[in-house]
Each structure stands twice: as structure tokens, then as C-alpha cells.
Length: 207
Image (cartoon, rainbow, N blue to C red; front, side):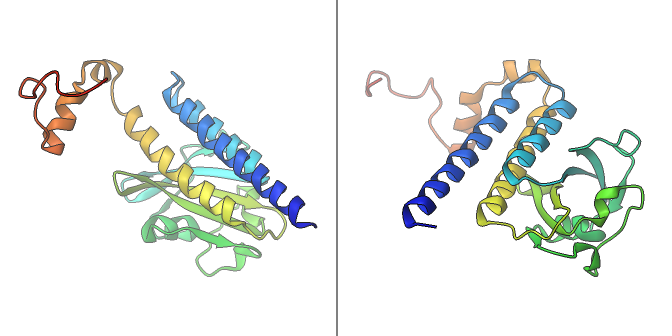
């Protein structure tokens, strides 16, 4: 591959990565159910990584619960769960670290099998924590049937989307009327030790 072709492909990849971030951001401000939004995010991850399976687990106390899947298993959504620290996903949640395994993920000593999920026999595994206010509130997993060396772009994308999903979960917990009534200026001033609007001088700055 020529240098020019390599740079062209890298640029295309970066543009695609940015487009995924933009589409996730737009999902965050639309009036969709949380389940629909998470499923749309899972599909965006699949488009970028070319994975065969993608899951989002969210925390419920000391457990991770399957809440979204690329190929939905209605009987499993909300039912499949593991303790934080259990399995590959539980390890990611406990350690707050990205985990990438390029082949034979099912042989890793941390692996936990769910016999009802066919994705458990996949070779490659990539997982990132879902972070909200510096706390782990879930994990997002990507799996490939065949061995797959995860690129830096894939790792970065999953890490960033984990952070975006964390922000989405915070917003989803707020009633719409609370968002409308919130005084964001007061909030910024209170936490940033900035002069309140009625204390600030007027006519001293430009538009």
C-alpha cells in the first residue's frame, strides 16, 4: 500500500469515527426511549467496528445486567446478569479498564459462559466501561466470530462511546420538566464561584 493510500484510508477512518460521535450526540438529544437509544448506539458501534455482536450491560447494585444487544434476545434482555468482578465484563467494570482480546477470549480464565447466548463462543472481545460522573455504571462489549486485532481507533471509539452512554444515562434520569425548570446559570455560578448575574457588572464586555 502506498503512503498516499494509507493516509487516505486513515483520514476516511477518522471521518467515520467523528460521524459516529456526532450521531450518538444527536441520539442523546432526541426524544427516544432509553432502550431504543441504546439499541441505535449498538448498531452504530457495529457499523464502525464490523463486529458480529455488541452488548451493553448496566449496573444494578452489585450486578451487571444485559440491557441492549445487536441481535436482541428478548428472553435475555434484563435477565442475563453477572456480579461485578465476574467474567470478562465484570472484570472491566471492577477495574475500570478497557479490555481487548484478539483471539480465544473464551479461554481467558476470567471468562464466564452463558450457554444460552451463542455469542459466547466468539473469538475476539473488546470491552470498555460506561462511565457517569467518574463512576462505572455499565460496560459495552464488542465481539468478533473470528480472531480480530482491535485497532487503536476501535478502542478509542468504544472508550468514548462508553463515556457518552454514561452522560446519556444521567440525562435519562432527569424528568423533562426538571430540565426545563433548571437554572443553569445559577448552577454554573454556584459550582464555579462565579459572580451571580445580579452581582455582575453590566456593559463591560462584548457580544
